Length: 471
Image 1 (cartoon, rainbow, N blue to C red):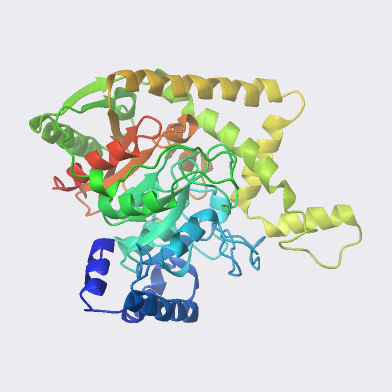
Image 2: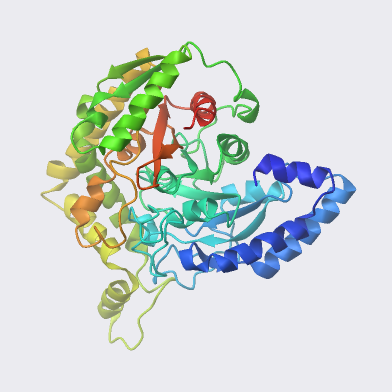
């Protein structure tokens, strides 16, 4: 069900929040084979539903009353286990809510559980989770994408109507695309990062994953806005996204980056992109090629900056303050070493070592400082493109969902699968992933709509239009 449908059913007294919860809990139980959830809040959700039913009866319920949501397990909920898909935080219970969670709860959503993810959001397949991989509901032999794979798969499998994920280099858009749902990476600073366990602080953003663009617009309107607890959040007016979806889109200018359509892109995805471009032209939208010449450097730039920030952010997990702590140690040095060795998985260790290396004396200027300069060039490519175009449309992934285990032993190939998504985080611009048909194997194909900073209203409007074209 959509958010609008849930609200209508409650308004017409055709259901109650308690009945909604009781309808979704069996779905989650039946869908355990997908491994979408790390923790399910059965009793808490039932109690919350009773409270909201009373508020609805009294006439002062929130805007999202009765909407059931899953929250990626990297976003803190007070008093509830937040593992980040890791052994290190397997038993961590934060004493505070993330700002996005506070805003949602203020509007009376029902949080039904925490969703699976790649460990500390480091991965593109959800295979690095300490709690085991999530499976793609379209084909359980394939990956759901990552790192927000649990959030995307839960929506695709109808275990929840909507969910929240986080996006550092495509971690909302890529799993949304591979699972056949909608995912939004907002402009950096549009949504508070307070309560989001950091992977790479200059890249991370919280965003919604839903079944349709309207639900995405509804959720982003709620969670967006300046937050005094997050100095990187920006004080920019939040438009009424849901009510601007049906505005006329004729006259929009759309660019398709030619660098995203070269060697390596699956022919079926390229064909679908050509079909989409043709439909847009038929409806009065200008579609032309555009060049982003520095995009070829985005993988190297991203994996230097992201791992450097990860190395710094994860240094606090040392076995002293909180998190996994190895027992029977002889001294402080052994405590640090053994706690981190056993507490972190292989992918997290790999990224910590990469990040520590590029920040080390003698390599800082050669790698990290140079990557910062290339990040500026990548951003300037987008700035120039948006001087001419209102939006850009690109593939989300070079391929459809591939087999579980296919690339787990080849991290370089796995990193290359992020080639179309990571530059958006480097530039800080918003990106909306929407499904547009399926491959010959029946696997979802998705595209992303990119806009200039704080232009979520424009990309949502175009996404809403494309959604009605889906063939």
